[in-house]
Length: 95
Image (cartoon, rainbow, N blue to C red; front, side):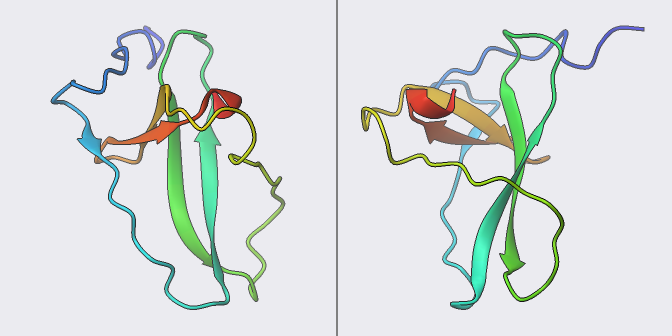
């Protein structure tokens, strides 16, 4: 059986199979965004994730904080979000 990432496309900003991510404001001030990064065994496979709004007052499991604010502010890489395959542009520090 072939690995699910084996046929994953290389992400291109001009690729019509990906739609750009549309920013959605947080629901309330007690909410934050949680990014679930999906594993891959292929280094060249696109980064894939789910992004959700979570209530900080509820237990949503163990997590780690990441910072996307350091390094060059150039959006040179991408990750693919969810089943709609929204493309989120990211800095090299997150790639």
